[in-house]
Image (cartoon, rainbow, N blue to C red; front, side, top):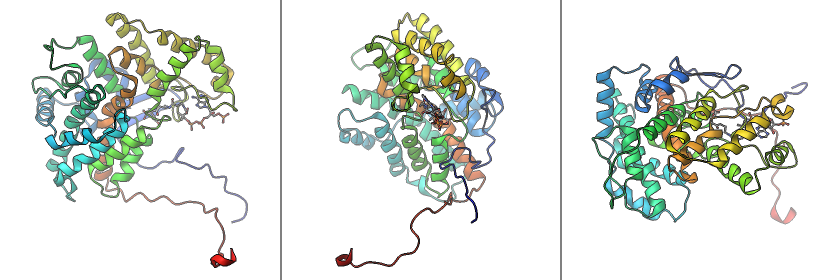
Amino acid sequence: LTGYITLDIGYKNTGATKSAITFLDGELGILKYRGYPIEQLAEKSTFIEVAYLLIYGELPTADQLNDFQKLISRHTLVHEDMKKFFDGFPRGSHPMGQLSSLIGALAAFNPESLKQGQSTEEVNLEIVKLIAKMSTLVSWIYKKSLDHPFIYPQNKYDYVTNFMYMTFAERTEEFTGIDPVVIDAMNKLLILHADHEQNCSASTVRIVGSSDANLYASISAGISALWGPLHGGANQAVIEMLEKIKEDGGDTDKWIAKAKDKNDPFRLMGFGHRVYKNFDPRAKIIKKACDDILEKLGVQDEVLEIAKRLEEVALKDPYFVERKLYPNVDFYSGIIYRALGFPTEMFTVLFALGRLPGWIAQWKEMKANKEPIGRPRQVYTGKTTRDYVATADR
Ligand code: SDX
């Protein structure tokens, strides 16, 4: 080779596939699921309806939605032996590590999912089971963190109400229902997280699935990718950052300076995005929802004011402006999760619950496209050929 290939390592802007699921325009801050603007879906739809849209490509009729919801309800129970996994997790183990293990283990309890060349009906059944059981397992991860008994699903509730029931109901108290404001907020948050084109975890699901690994193994891999603080783990990192700034006296200028200092590893978590070089449209919706929901629930959260001050200062600062760093989906979402009663370490599993339909849609599309097994190449930068040297001569 004469001259040099300037190689920007890593999947930064690789066109890895063709997809009809989600459209992003990073310059204009546009996000659409199957052509529907996220703003309309967040305002008018429900999470289960958006899940149907992402997976099957069209908004369901009333009957289709009713059948989908009923089928999911019928599969929310998990095999009793799945509970034994919870006995094995050490106290305080991270919910994302538990969730990726549990979802991978579902393959063992659904051996038919290992069958190659499953029919459409068989694949659809696996999809319904996974959506149903993940909500039960996420709520049980929360109960395990409290050392409280698991709450079993109730088929009479819709998906989000059932999830919140299993998460927050207690055996010792009569369940008096969930505030509609909370149900609406949870639907909105799950919708906003439902898919996002070829992000790190969706690409992971696609490449693992391209080896003909089963759906549960592919989604378990996606959960592990989402765990990283540069990806889905950022929503937990944002709250931890805001709490640290609060404890430090709330001096936002000091922390903005730290984020700009190349010698300081500190980054403004919840800021910046590989694709959005404008406002993340989800962040705009969540920021507005933050004010509405906290007001309706009568919740005061000092870190919300710190977040708003950070955003205000950063958006005027040349460092952030030049690098087009804006708040992303993770910057405000944790403040709402907290107002809804979730502890910080549950935030990323909530992101995973929301992203599940998107991962499933991406996996299903990759199979339908009959995409070949993913196998990228490299530019070799190692040693040229050399001969073996006996130990005594090294
Ligand atoms: C998600 O891809 C998706 O769609 C993801 C997601 C989804 O829905 O699936 O949207 C969800 O993962 C949102 C992102 C959550 N992560 C964070 O909030 C972590 C903080 N943000 C970053 O670490 C960063 O912005 C990334 C990882 C999100 C994007 O990184 P890039 O595109 O690789 O950009 P980069 O790291 O090369 O940064 C470019 C410049 C660098 O400075 P210079 O080398 O030019 O001097 O911007 C700086 C970076 O140092 N920079 C930041 C910063 N983010 C980037 N500086 C301070 N604070 C930050 N948050």
